[in-house]
Length: 332
Ligand code: SF4
Image 1 (tube, rainbow, N blue to C red):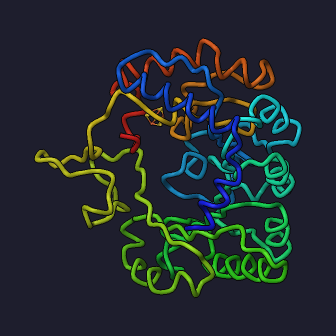
Image 2 (image 1 turned 90 degrees about the horizontal axis):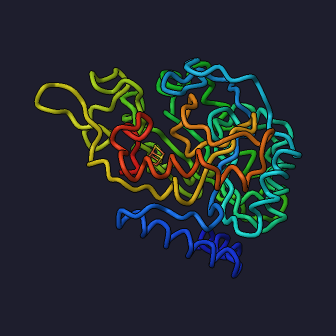
């Protein structure tokens, strides 16, 4: 925990701090029902290194083929376009969105580009292609935090959601990363073992609680799962109510827990850049339905303050419960 805070604070320059304050002010305006100004630049961004995947997870838009983007890897040139307008004020860059980031063989170089600009970097992976050589390259890239998805501790549990995946590769990947950190004398990336809360993983939770450190993780996270068609339940929905994002109502259907509020920190402070250069409001816009623009047509700065971005932020403020992507969002 202390290491994470230290690595984060290390990135906090005066310009980034002032930009963060401006973003918070804008969010306060939204809380008061006032139109956001967006005088600041993004505080955090997610970029998509690759928009394809090697697995077929049923609740993933890519894995279940709900979206068919043109297969694309993010290039260094595209990342440079994003950083040109944002690096002085950006605090955090997440190297993941929908596809599997490690499929982009240039990933360590992309991460290192952001790291050299003093930005906190984070990547999330299914770790299926994480070899000893790639582990060393990731450690050398300066990556601050690596989230490794492990949805089940046995192949029988893991394979129910991570369709096509091999749990042994995840165990091996955790070892490769730890060996590389020891060999290179580094304490980063901080490794977070993440397990989705599903009916198939509920029997693995105690195992992870007891063994995550032995497996090579620094922290352990259990994450509730998003379901596309949740109203009538899903066989993968956890049986334990506390493990679900959805509550069972009196009429037997499921509703998202909490009340949708007319504000959203993510839409004020961040955005997503997909592998094709599309800029989206947040990671819930998977299809996409609310593209702000594309880096092939405009600069990031123009898109961030463009009409489409401003009108979407305004729409979240005035009628968030009617926006489809916001209806299934935990940012309540
Ligand atoms: S889905 Fe809507 S409420 Fe949720 S993060 Fe995106 S814009 Fe914000």
